[in-house]
Length: 288
Image 1 (tube, one colour):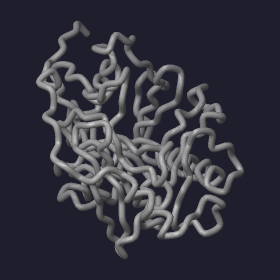
Image 2 (image 1 turned 180 degrees about the horizontal axis):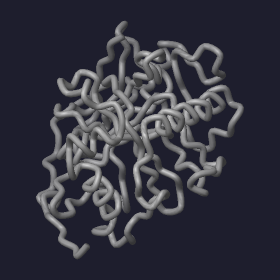
Image 3 (image 1 turned 30 degrees about the vertical axis):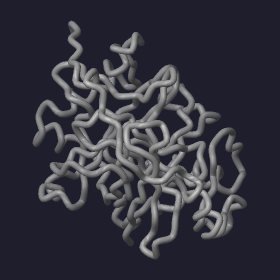
Image 4 (image 1 turned 60 degrees about the vertical axis):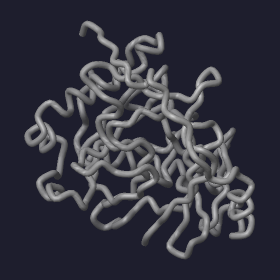
């Protein structure tokens, strides 16, 4: 199963979008049409890369837009770039989401005591390759961190690309601690402080900021897949989410290929991008 992307609009502007196509060249939703599993028997999942490592643009699956293309988050009328909190530069992993998952905002998690953040479940790929925006990779789940982001549960699932030459050495969260010393601590530090330059308080974590293991993480991913199943079949209230899809035949939101194509063609043509502001390179320093 292969996928490709089609860019529309101008990069680094508010009209920029990244749409997705399947191996037949038909437009699809990365949220709803890319299968959660690359290999269900071995618990290998697909992951959509929204933000390549070391970049700052806060790209994300547009959960409220038809076909859910990637677009850059906007805050107070400006494109959002994640600040560099010393010693980090941009995102310190390839960052993205597992398709066909949903953190239900109406479900209070029994472990964290908080409801879901209304998004697909997030992943941090610790592999060596710097992925490209919109790349869809196959990943092994290694563990998870429970971020409490402004009162919402926001799981951060630690994964490794199955094509990484070292993937065979990583099977659980302790392998990350052993083979990539400092990476998990840096991950907690990154998520704790990345909003501080925006004037917000440090983020909090469930489990005292400890990572849960592979089995716990896989079960968490699978539970969000069940929430997504209820969402896509209209058994849960979609709220502001757009569930337009082209492949979930039993979903009332399933559309034709022509309808999907019309969505993409209504977007601006791809053009030359704007430069990234110099301010994005600034480093912020704080006492720990």
